[in-house]
Image (cartoon, rainbow, N blue to C red; front, side):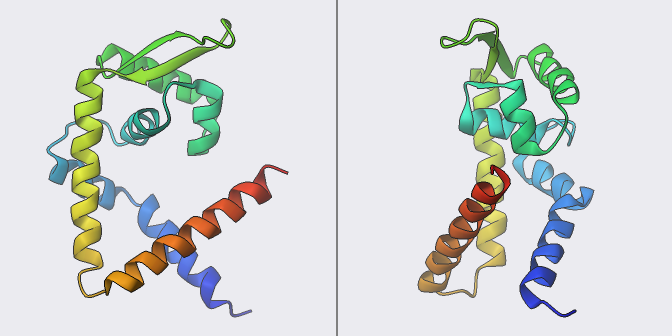
Length: 146
């Protein structure tokens, strides 16, 4: 069964799931951090304060693994956890100043990589890609939250 969209998405997911792009990104960002931890740090930086259960859902890992990994980020002084203002039973993570700087470095390196990948794309095509990927992501999120 041929489905070009499905094939393209599988190719992208395959690229993003390989260790080499993560190593390249961390190297370009001049960041030394376990590749299992940096996606959590970035998500905390983007979405924090955030609890472990919500973070685990975002990254597609079980909450006990994410809890241990967030504890490691806390040991590295990249995040800090404190009780949620809405529910004292939930500890929410936020990035520290050092963690925020690292998130910025990773973001800048990621932007440069995408600039290189899309160098020959028009501004209109880049805008349209962003719009369509956002639309697809929103539909997927809606589908999976039913």
